[in-house]
Image (cartoon, rainbow, N blue to C red; front, side):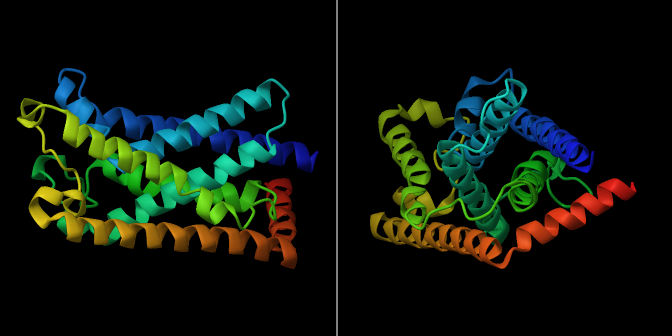
Length: 236
């Protein structure tokens, strides 16, 4: 009975995540402006949010079709999505002073709704999903390097767009969404150093995730959290 209630809570949590994540992604787009929509795909934020959204949808589909939701491949991509969305939060939060936002989009919290959802709510919810619902000890140390594939694909696509698109594509939207990737302004050398710094952040985050996963598994902390969660669910 307790286990069944826990599974229901996990299901409701993930459906809620999908709704919130999809809402944040949708608000980023302007249905009447193609240039703005194309420009939004220059942001790693959008890439990582879509990654997390697709992953959660796949989990739900597998859940309702009775298929394995803890396969090695799913766990691998869960870690990759987790690392990407965590770095999305970190880079945005600690470089926020470099981002210029229009006053008419601000909320009482000092940020637009889409920024709050995409940079804070979604990352925290995805991290909590990993901490509370995923069995520990499933990530591998070699994932620290291979999870870099996602940001690598992003950076290749980003620079390809900058080089291949005609100048008129950037009349109404900025060419570079991030100051540290604007090699025309800061120079190739400084841009490369920024990229190396970001790679270091990703590697550090990947290491922390794998280490924490292994630590929680060895200490049995995950099992203790499960018991506490079960008690709260049974008492409610």
